[in-house]
Image: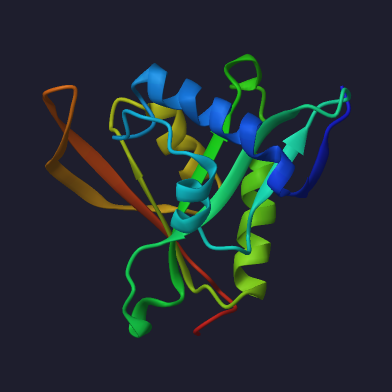
Length: 165
């Protein structure tokens, strides 16, 4: 199969939100329980560092983007990674293509730290991030509730070897 990596465009939003809905429904990817509208999603993420992966039929099958971790100026170079794939394309090794591009693009835009908060039972995602240069910082116990159940998150981070050294 051939895949194309490209910048995310506004017209991609319906598929981006559909893939996010799949992540919500799976219960392993996010504390979110409702899909935001495109305007709310757009406000939550940085305008740069947004990428999609398309299949040979020009259908978006995965996406990644960065969101700020704080509004404070001192943390302007720290961002949280979001990366999601359509259920039919998970586990095929395609995530590395998106994440490597996101890392390169983030450094070009001055980000020095990328972080990801993952449910500990999502071992595939934890291992995926570690394989791509993220280190485990620790576990935040009972950080939030999802459907009435307290959930821990494993925090991973990747420090740039180029920006902020």
